[in-house]
Length: 267
Ligand SMILES: O=P(O)(O)OC[C@H]1O[C@H](O[C@H]2O[C@H](CO)[C@@H](O)[C@H](O)[C@H]2O)[C@H](O)[C@@H](O)[C@@H]1O
Image: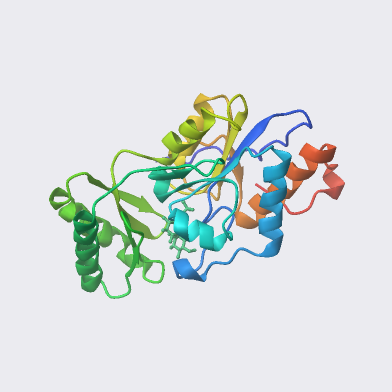
């Protein structure tokens, strides 16, 4: 497959632009670590998100493959809206929870099957996320394709579940929701309704978010260089995404910084 032309860096908002920000977490706001628990949200990042949330009158959401419980721990129980487990869990800015429910016996079946597969692949780590389970191979990336094939084999015994590949991870998750649906859902109500959706993400699951942003005349911003992508803009890495978000905050509050004063490179 031929490479896509390189994507431009995203624009900054004007002070009167009514953006709604949808931010993926791992690989976008946070640099990758070898273990899901080894990531850290420093005070600079949490203050940045808090400030953006206030400046956007609440129109900011995290959209992640992590569970809401995990996001609450990482971001210290924030007030902003969050979609967890790729949209299977959704909590609005009003604190109301809407989510898929999967019974205990099904959860334990999925967990058991994932545990069996991990046992066959030394180096693969199981992350139990409740109704979804992730099999991580970041420390043994050569296992990714075999792991994907093995998970594909067990899918017929897990009706209602689907395989979700990601960055050095293969997940088993209930069908029927994705990040794009979560964004569309949030965009249908206050404080998001009527704003321009701006979706920033790095992974395959974020393509659904890019699609929704594009459909709603918004901005789709890919972090990294994964191809192909529906994104129309790009930032090179999480550090560039964070630097761009600082400039977005400044632009919303005071107008865009001149190039000479902007910090951090992007695309
Ligand atoms: O949608 P996201 O917020 O990007 O979450 C996607 C997955 O992120 C986590 O896994 C990824 O980050 C880990 C920590 O850096 C890394 O070790 C792993 O290889 C990555 O795939 C999280 O653990 C998953 O549950 C999320 O689905």
